[in-house]
Image 1 (cartoon, one colour):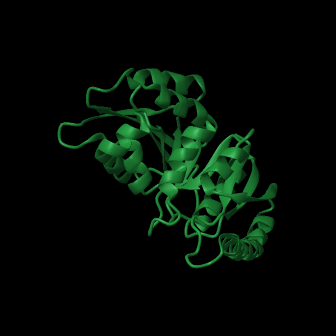
Image 2 (image 1 turned 60 degrees about the vertical axis):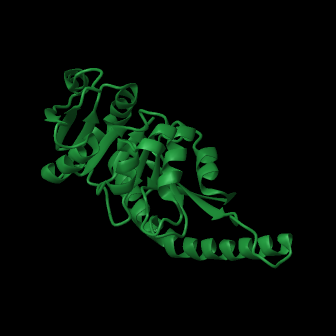
Image 3 (image 1 turned 30 degrees about the horizontal axis):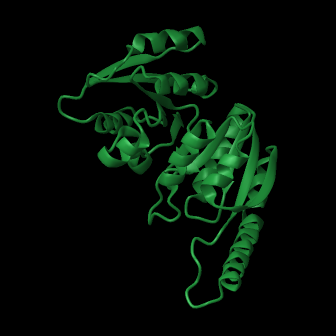
Length: 267
């Protein structure tokens, strides 16, 4: 997990993304690829010539991102970490997906206050489209507790398998690991198999089994994060189709909306 792709864009979640990315690069000995996206205008300004309006809005965005780089790049240089700064123009989700390449991990936000840009939607699109693990960061965080308590939401699905395997380089730094199994009838393989896998990689963990008799799984996960003081959550993303999650709700959807700690997600 050495090549970390970080979205750079002048929005309310950027400092959270940057702080988490810097901590992860230090812990993992990684390289940061800072992808600075000049966002294409979503709509034409009413009453103006289409091309002229688009050019004016785009020029404004370019100036914003130039100023953003001037403010942000000194923080990267001061960190002493290895990084590249890559500039592109386009829409946020496709730009991140196109840049994924040999990336090991992508740093984005979960839902932002005010909903602009729609980071929950972007995180979902990138998670599915890029085929890479992502870390979705709450906008208020200012770091990543890699040496803290890691919580793994386990249901035995192929998404949970993938998340556990991908997170190993990160989990190896955790001071404690808990495998949470919510017994709601959907567990496909018991957490004992995941525990054995962690042991084979030189880690120990505790299995915690909770009933869903009184709360839905997403609430159980959020309550467990709070009770354990977990530093981050590892889970598979969109075990059901995104259509079903959008229509009926789902654990991934709620974590991208409410999780108070960074979420490591794979699909």
